[in-house]
Image (cartoon, rainbow, N blue to C red; front, side, top):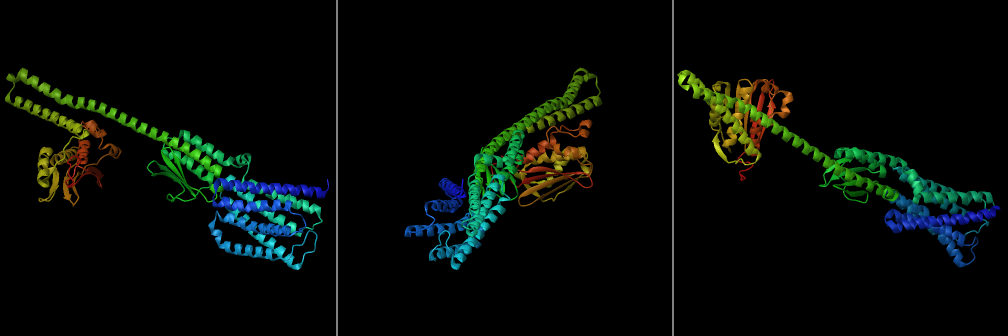
Length: 578
């Protein structure tokens, strides 16, 4: 086969390859109809037009139509590097600072093309003016094409593998086509071997353009292998994740790398952020921001400008991974809810068991004592001295008072749990009320309590809440702390505060977390048989029923401080707004 025949065959291959490239670019534009696909269709459509025109037009133009068609073909060729530059500018608007010079040079060269008196035919002598024009065309073509190639290559470094390889294919194709045009200009027309090499380079550039523009599925699959491994690992992690945070930790990083995103945000159904990969706030809606609805929430993917064009398949894969993420989130929510309910049930069962054991234990002693005293008085009452009878009656009163106190606590607890405690704030003299409670609670230890409350201080507070909380705090301080026990109070515009502070060893650090839990007692209190573990729990419940709280603080160097905080004149059940 002669070299001329080979060149003829290669010229047909070139026409088919670039014609196919133009068709594929136009097909992509018909599907997407966005700025990048429009510039791609114009850019590669010009190459297809030039390649097909080269097969249709004769080597030597004779008629006016052929001469005009030849000029139009050259004008279209001049447009190609500018359109390729505009294609890259569709992703990176910062290149607009080069836009006007590029447009001016291209427009000038088009005007020069139209103004040329004639085009030398193949093998004819080239005038100096035409040679300058020809080298200017090569310079314009090469400069703009290489700028576009450099921008694509540089931007591809931060993209996922498929987008990176596609952008590099386009970059290499632009460089190869520039070399093709340069060699075609300088190569002698009669050097058929060099002409074959130029044709081969043109075919290589067409194939590289096709790989960059629309790579086959098998090629995409090979290129996508690193991301697929990360996606597989992420899906495996989703299967064992037990919290929303673990779900996010497994998928957000692979999602980011899958589409080269700037950031990915995982939101719940209320639009609150569960987690994010890379810092920042959720970006506003825009062409680079993808919102993917998933079960029970949404994914906000702040994709790069190249992702929609070069990563359309990856975006679909991202949607699938997002759907699995939503299912995993639903599963973790159910798991967390089930675990919380199980813990609550276990806690309730423990409280019930503690309650039964405590009630049986606490009531057994006074009931046994009362029963013994009553039987003794019934059987031996006539034989006992007055002193013995008085001692037994004192014991009877003491034990019945103990039973009454425990029953009152249990009733308080049941009413507080049922939210049936009425809150009716009234104005009370704080110091006088505290003095009465000290007299009732201290049982001969009144001198151990120091009351530092102004005589004229009044508080708008429910009296029952005040009595229950303060008496519990006084009893607790005298029972577990050391003197002096200091009681202070103050009132601001919004809150009334009363503090009971003792000078004992304070609450053991390991017991602080259970301090206000029902039926909870420290090891020391349990060993000494002190209290029922209900006092502080009931006191805090009363404070919260009033819309306030009861808090604990450690005192330096030792001691415990309990502070009652109540909003002025407000409660959970009072129905007032004052």
